[in-house]
Image (cartoon, one colour):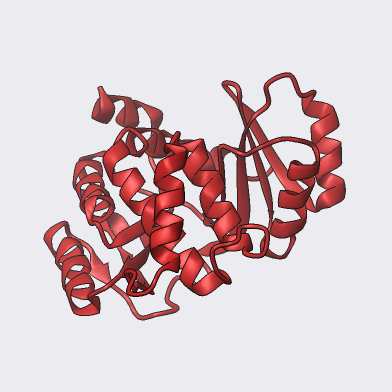
Length: 249
């Protein structure tokens, strides 16, 4: 189905990012905080965004105590306040980059993000400049366990899923943004807890990058992902497998 090849390189990158556990936990706690304050309070049954944040934290093996502590702190008086913001721009060879942030200091975040793009041969664009480059889609990453893949696929199609990938024991489900809740509910009914569930920005077109520029591009991505104010980074970079292997070896 559509989407298999376009996500291969992104998943390769994601695997490297997931190794940074400390950073991942920090970002998960921040997402839990934002979810509690903007999504409807500390009850996950009444707050879909918080329910998703908790699922993702569990999928990353965050201890239950850490999750509960983050929820209680966010629900209490005087908890951290974060403003969500996005940045759109281009990296080397015109690769599109979309950045999602949650920050308690907008001026710091704007300055940092602009400096990363400038340092690594990129440029920030105007809001909306990438509106046709990325689609907003629901993405669920599952460990099938003893579930039958074909039966699960049919159940999820009925619930609104429209694309699937299966590779190396990982089953990924895609859905339109409007169907995210119904697919999430169906997985809950089936007793399947996703390793990751989120609304992601899926590239509608890929942009090839020259091998000589790939290292600089990855330095830009690394700088963005290492920033505590940055929650997620999306791009539409397409690169040969040989270049990827050489970079990560």
